[in-house]
Length: 398
Image (tube, rainbow, N blue to C red):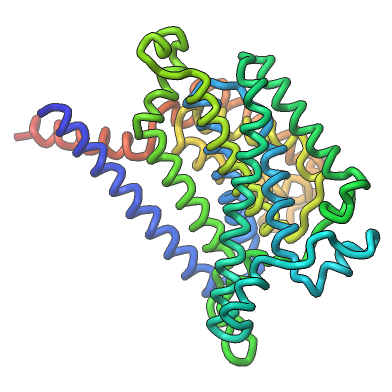
């Protein structure tokens, strides 16, 4: 009976979280179509959505399974390149791959679907949506495939050794994708461009003008759906097995949990969603270039996970938005030499000072929130705690 009551409390808190998420998504559509489309708000929302997905995927393997992986930038690179290669329109490939006199792949997925449904009107929109969605899924599958192959040997390692091995993979894959011999596929060290971005999902009227803007809504929607799937996994029997491995591998194995199988599963699923995040990052940046996916990107994502709370999905999402908003927007005035209001000049505000202040803020968070902002709690847990406190006060008052 008590177990059923706890499940009901958990489900009610989760339901409230879903409702709030839906309201926020609707609010983004309203804001995007009433405010200036070039506002910095929408730029940081797009990037924060991408980073929240990759942070949650890293937390799945690091926080919930206890495997110290640092290969996230490499898996994002695989996803970004897979998406870009498969969605560059056929008519643009010669100009994109001009150094190599054309591409080895001469079709695009959205072009194939538009050939079936037509290029004009609704048919063109359906072809675009199906082509992009298939490319995003394939981006995740390619990343998961590479994760499976490298996971066979490296997942036998533990702690720092696993981190070094996965970090080495990310650096190797970045160098390989810039290899000139693969130029007709990856375009070598040059960038890929011309593929559909988030702005491609804006709805246009008959004259070609944008009627409804969805460029900020789409990354938030895709990230929310992917994170929802990860939450379902964490709350399943597989998720409980991951947590058991994190707590004590020997005890988990004694309980009948196949360590190799579940570690491989966690690693591949995490890599799949990192690949999806890589495809979303390509859509955000509108270009793909291997040198963007450095080890610094992985450290940045790991920092977000630590700030939010290792073992908390909600913490990773919250920390992603706070990190991107602070680093990309709110603290930008520190590099300008003046305060954001009144145009008051400040002598020690100069280029680079923003990162100094940002570093101090991170140090304060780490010092005073040792387990991160959320610890191991979720938003639904906080909602349930608040409701229990309110109920207790009400009963005491009566």
